[in-house]
Image (cartoon, rainbow, N blue to C red):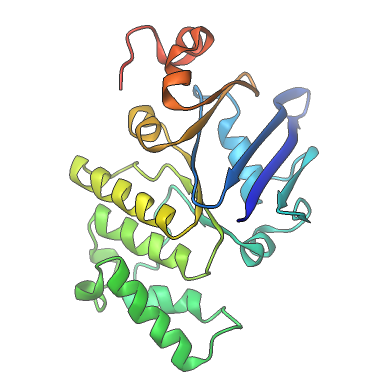
Length: 241
């Protein structure tokens, strides 16, 4: 079993400290949420783990491997997959070519291995029927499926999902939740940050709540919903799952 750990992360911009002493962990096959009000520092925390933002203090580790000073592509090689909020597929490439572009970076696969992995991903994510469709022609739900398949093409131990429920219709939200559960059954650890609190809490086993740059609560959905500080600064007193 692998574990992804962020330890004592801190970040300041000029004189303003936006993250202070945040620690969290994700284990293989665990779904974890990172939530909080706008401007609370959760996105900066998330980006420090991905490698988009350099931490001023703290460490990011996969098991005992310290990847804190690795760039994003180095962390990807170490096992951290990333699904950005914005559309990340190549609009003028087919679905199959979008996935193959990532598989081409795999040094452990020869040509036959890459083709076999492509076929496997197309089947696994039920996108074989749109394999020849261009990225620009996909619906929001189809695009998300292709993007998640691409993230899996790197054979990650963990996948970090940035706003996976954004810009998709309610049917596709359910579809994405099923995919996330599927990733869990494959033993992949998943970290989600999303403004859709209800859907994120509903799917997570553990959630971390950030406010004013620091953790104010962690635990399962029941624990989070019962926390008075979380109610006062984030969810309100009427929020229900």
